[in-house]
Each structure stands twice: as structure tokens, then as C-alpha cells.
Image 1 (cartoon, rainbow, N blue to C red):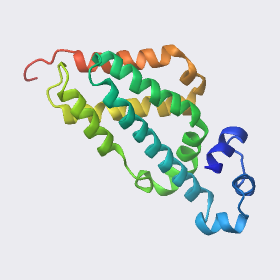
Image 2 (cartoon, one colour):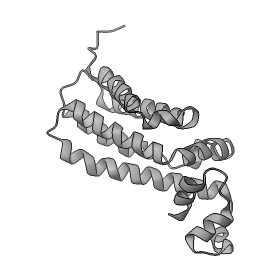
Image 3 (cartoon, helix red, strand yellow):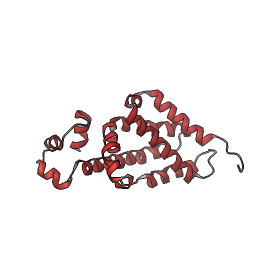
Image 4 (cartoon, rainbow, N blue to C red):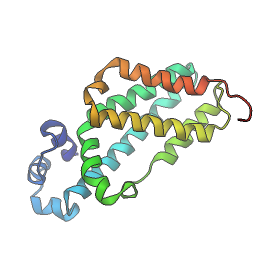
Length: 182
């Protein structure tokens, strides 16, 4: 999508006019489909999330026989690389869209991703007691950490240590022995 390319190339200040120029459409046509910048950003974020989910869904079957840490490394590596590529969009959605629309303004693809992750956890030797709950916790934590890095320290997303630490966090959670009742 031309808007995503415009954001990557020109940053947060890119105008709707410039996006129209890069897309090959007139500004009136762009505004016909996206009445304001927030609606365009929502659509871009939705498409980005769908693309990320599709990439994970494509990646996971090829790793079914791989050790758990390899699966986790590859999936987190993919998500971090994509977040690095879309850090301007993440920042704009967080600053411009969420305060006005709220999180319900974006479609939640979390249930689909959580179901995929829970199925993988069930098929692996982990210490996880409730794979559905664990999958949701892992996804929320990873998303929060990556989004925070995109907002506050985007240079971290390109550092291998960032991904390694995130993998260690997830692996530690999944492999940590669970005790009895608290």
C-alpha cells in the first residue's frame, strides 16, 4: 500500500496529499475511501496486523518439528523485524488514533493468534498449565514490549539483543515450573 511506503520513506509528517500522489490517485479519491488521517492509519494498522498474522501462520507449520526455542526465536524475530519496519505507523496509531477511537477502533486479531500459539504450546513439552491463558499472556506481553520499544526506543528493534531478551522472557515463562496453589 502506498500509504505504508510513504510513512516508511517520509515519516510521521507525511501528508494525505503526498500519500495520494504516491498511490497514483487523486486526493478526492483518497478522501472518499478514508475521510480522515485516523481512518487511513486504522486501515494501515489493520492490514499490517493481518500481514503479520499471515506471516506467522505461514512460518509455524515449517517449525512443527523444531525445538521450542527455535520456534519462539523465529516467530519473535519475525514480529520484531516487522515492528521495526512499521515503527512510524505504530507511533502514529498510538498517538493519533487510540486517544480518539480507543482500542476498539482497531480490529482485534489477538484471538486468532492466541489460538495458533495455544495449539503449539499444547503440542510441546512446557510447564504451561493452561495453554489458552498462557498464549494470551505471551501475546499481550510481547506486543506491549515491542510497541513500547517502537514508541520509546525504536533503535532497539534493530538490535539482536532485543530479540534475544524477548525470546528469553517467553522461554522462561513457558519453561518455569509451576507450583501448587498459592
